[in-house]
Image (cartoon, rainbow, N blue to C red):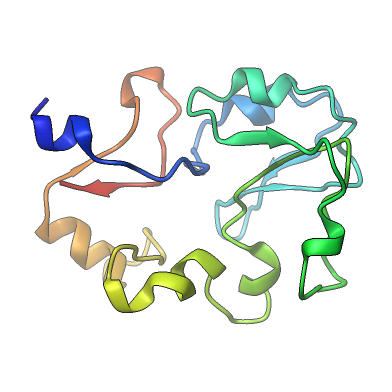
Length: 154
């Protein structure tokens, strides 16, 4: 691997795998694949904080809430459970924002830079599909068989 790749920082985010080990190990089914979009989501009210999913995730994309994050959340979508103290959380591509037709917050924050693209990988005409066809990409740890849905353009 080139020094450029070795020395660059990459965001540690959920890879929204097609074969996610975190879903398999969750004893309460708090982690699940949303059927209509393939995003690996969480129901924070079902999570018991056992942290099995943290151990199972080969990407280190989950964290445990030792403190209550709710005082720091500016906007709520009441149709989605809010994360709380004592549960594991991860990137859900802001499922609560997607439900309102908005983009994930990370994408909105850096959109002008073009550093991230979000879209439907199953739609060959989507911007993300076109960019992936036109550029060399890598996925993190593909040999693990998780089939990650996050690609990095190199």
